[in-house]
Amino acid sequence: MASAAPRIGVMTMQPGEVFFERFGHDALVVADADTGQATSYNFGFFDPDEPGFIGRFIDGKMLYYLVALPVQQDLESYREEGRGVSIQWLDLPASQAQALADSLAWRAQPQNARYPYDYFNSNCATQVRDALNTVMGGALKKQLAGRSRGNTYRSESVRLASPAWWMWIGFDLGFGPYADQQLSRWDEAFVPMRLADALAQVKNTEGRPLVQQTQQLLPHTIAPEPPEAARPWWPWLLAGVAIAFALVALGKRHPRGVAALALPFWLLCTLAGALMLFIWFGSGHIAGWANRNLLLLNPLCVLLLWPAIKLLRGKPLSRFAAWVLRGVAVMAALGWMLHWFPFNVQANVAWVALLLPIHLAIAYVFTAQRGLSR
Image (tube, rainbow, N blue to C red; front, side, top):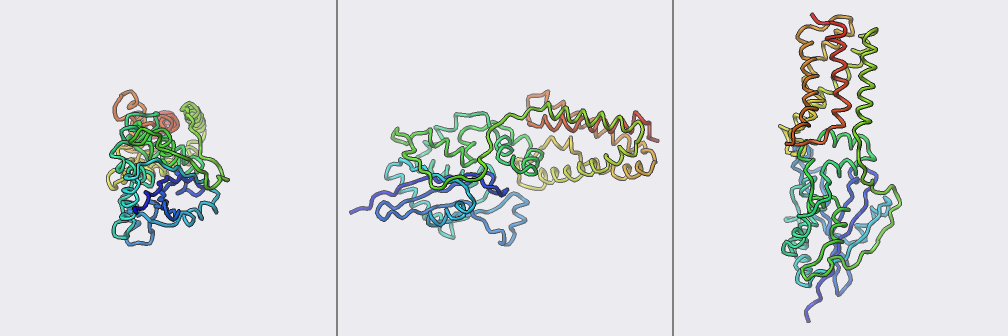
């Protein structure tokens, strides 16, 4: 007698407290109908000790792999970390459930397990999504691709990274226009929790709800997933204007004090701008290409570092340095003006509002207010 088809589930793990756990995680579960043995197919494994890992990480060409392990073993680390885990048992026709189980078993073999990892298009959640879509003959994508909630790669990344300030700032400054495209529910499913939400709203190929039952496996005992929240730009503008006025007032009496503040600011611009240029021209991280924040954190500030030291010694700017300083301020203003045009939009208004007034104030202090160029 033929064996009954396996039962298929999607297991979703809530975000953890370590930075690489901030986006949550998921896995496909195959439960044998005869023995009840449940196997977790987890796409989230990588080996940081393998040759070339660091180079591929920097280049944006990492390799992850699929591992099959008993569900209870997979749950152990999440239990210890206090991360909630739930499973959605799916109502797949027997032929599709068996095809998925066979495909996962084949892919979990060491010679087939590796896949090229991408944060947005090929991660643990999209691998689960794509595997389901394949056995459903494309029906999952058809139901999700035409719907959108207006989220973007940037909004989702910043939201989930928000408990780690350095992480969300890095994402927000490091992403270019690619990260600001509005996502369909299909694309939004790069986040495991979004995928779980989407699965609960779609139907199988026979017209029934795809999710048959949702079961809580582990309680969530740490901070919950950050909620969606709009980020107004005006507090950033108030901060930028306040800093600018303070710099101008300080420059009237103590220009060296402004130079002491400008030096680390220009150093930050130099280092951050150099990193953005490398990401654009030297790596495969397409989310960071054509980043308009280069106009705000301008690597040309490297030409102002030595002049800043001279200013600290009480010497005036050279004519060349003064023009560089004006040029940096004008390019920062260009970052604001680009928002007038409806193409290649980048959601960096908050950073423009904060940094543009600072650039303008420093340029005013050293090229207009003091006339310190020769």
